[in-house]
Image (cartoon, one colour):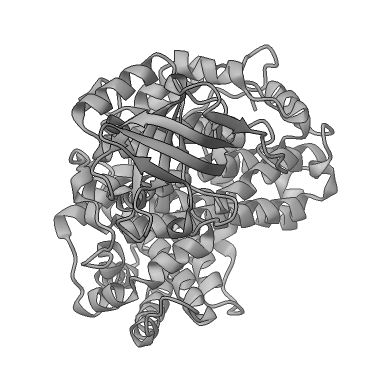
Length: 576
């Protein structure tokens, strides 16, 4: 089974050179030096531009290379695997430009596309120091003339606020505020009058030290009326829609970091703890982390393909991806650190201190593009649709098939199909009962281990209980009970289980002749992944861990062969 996005990413990775070679611009040694000096990775970002990464931030309709979010996700995972700071610093341009692709007019979008092709950086300025995630409380405001707006106020914790030539600003254009009181303004800083804006000092952070995380203040900054993105008053709606795209893309950023962490852990284990068969406890931690990473990959694959195939459901899909994948990788990194001991964290003592750096860097992912509670709350607000969808078993069959069959051709992304609320719930989760029946039938025929059949029965029971509890929840705009957040978190774990089950069922035949066939045979990765998910959904239940011993061979085989830790074959440009 060929997976073309991985092939594209592998070519890109080769062009970046071996990250263990300190003479390469994008090497682990160079990234460690930049982190220590808290210096922006200017040269590396320039290299990424030269290799065409920024073209994948611009849709093909505007002369770019973005026609597949799968391709973009694979490239971002590749960059994040080398260094998350670089990935975040560079991808900020997509965040800043996405609202223009969605809501801007053709002339505005074409102009911005040309600027990005010429190397311009775009930032997205949403948050303010006093209001955090509460965008409706934002105070940066405008006065309006016949052909101009005058902007006053400050934005804070903005990626590339100082370096960017353009900043897309969420501004209060109606003094009364409210959902229709905000507009997006694409501001070209180069066209502003001297003294009408100033870049605020960079914020010193524990992780991603070299990134430009700063702010910008406007004082009577006059901009043309043509700077408005879309219709005045639609800014908040546009932001909520583009966040569905950017939250989905947080999945590959976390995946790349998790892959790097696991690769370092395997190497450290072999270098310092002896062969895997001599360290069963450490090896079990490694294989459990491997299973977690494969589950996170399954969730990310389904989520990214849903951008194209289940666009109207992306409000729940993106929230689930953003909650589940960064949290899983964060826990994976913590577990590996515990298993390996203090030595792997010491700065510069082991492979340029890469493990402690990625551990620091990755903490931003739970905050980036809305923190975990913001995304859980987005799911809580859609409990009624999710509960009804589960009861009725309503599924967009064609959209689901495209989302989970990795050989299926994806339709072009239609931004106009994005919705603030998924009216039909989640096709992926609502398809789970029927998919679990398939699994139990396969288990009865001994096509998969008996444990998979037992896990299917257990998941069916959990899923029904969970949705019954969600149906009993009474929505509240304020004072959301803590139990609702627990239900939402559990729903993301059921979403992950659905992604695993559907991906295995729909791709196992095509995977049979691929280099990763051993992972798919007899449901190996599926059994391990479901065991890990059920350990979260029903903690304290003792389950047979023999599957992780069988998984160990694949973990060490992919490490030894220089392959990506993945369900799908991809060779990396990295020496073992």
